[in-house]
Length: 346
Image (cartoon, rainbow, N blue to C red):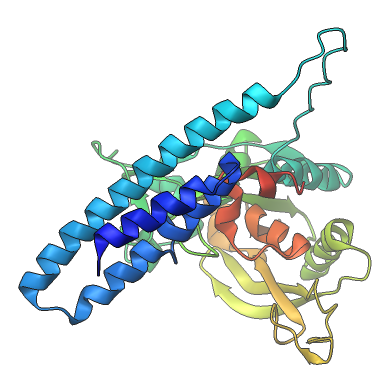
């Protein structure tokens, strides 16, 4: 590994760059995730301990050298490009490009409008809440796995004797009993609660902060048929008239019976086949939307409502997830990178 030769190569290649964009491309070739610097780092695995120390220092020095030389080259090229721009002061100023709403904001507005049409009011409840509303009233005992600090973010502070510890709420379901209390335990209740939730996960399908929308309906004579009809109305309004819904039996602590909601894949339209090959998105023709079910009697009791008179249903869906399913987005982190190329798609 001859660092001196590599440095000379970098200088020669930068000298050939005629635009700042070309210098940026060269920077990616050397410093990108799959760039030459990382290739050099991978290559030192086979060296002895002493050789590794020397090679590591040399590679880090080379990385710093590339960073500085690219910065200098880009600065000079930007200056040259600006000098070439001719300005006609008699021309009218260019129109400012209008901005656009973030894709999550677009989805929130669309979802709110869909449920407003069938009498659901939009509510908002705390992102920082007590264990009492996040777990206790939702029929989740202290021994429940979701109450472990591996699944939930607890905040420092003195716990309340009744309410317990404070948490960054892991779901919008903390608004269910709060809404019952707001209405003085007097149905009918038709609420759509949209807010931020927090769980310590980070990968292509999870972020530590995400958005969720919660539906809650409580009244006399509410059945699973009402739930299925509402879900079909939402799915066809949001994803398209040809999208179908199915319910799969599941278990959630605060609903009984409980279901997972699936919709026909937005890519293969439920056929599980795309261009003669198995659909890479769903592999089965169905995509999981989220969880739902009939409100557990203990939750109604916690909200001061008699479960022998009233019944209800609830659901909770991630906004990022439904948007990914609608537009075929494969990485949830795209929403929060600030990459204008992604945001311009909306």
